[in-house]
Length: 151
Image (tube, rainbow, N blue to C red; front, side, top):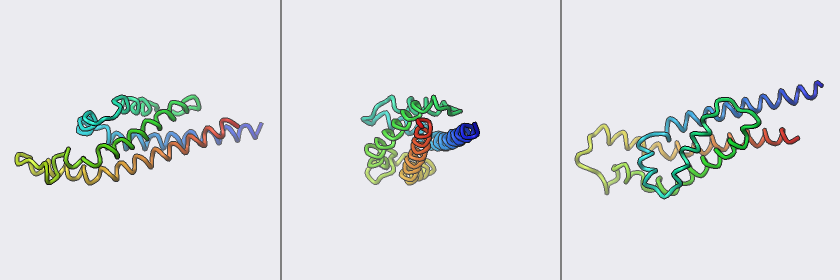
């Protein structure tokens, strides 16, 4: 009986840790990737248009239960694909798309808007790295949860 209670307590702690990673990932995604400017740029890219809605479904989870593991795993796959596609298709041309490269600068751009877009472009790679790190942390917490649930 005590062993079962210890196993349940361990599982609850792991699920709570998964919730913490999911919350951190949700906050990072909302702050840096679920933005109108990015949505407009992503719409122009050759990537699956269902990625962002499927990622939003993952972030709809507020509490994590063992029955949510497969939904979370699917969301992790979509996040991984999203990050890969942004790195592959958007990162190389981001400065051009934001009209801040030497080739696309517009004379009608206001100075504050241009500075903001330069900041976005310079922070984008680090934000993408952080998205990948948080996604991997969530993946590892799920792998631990699945391992202990299958025992």
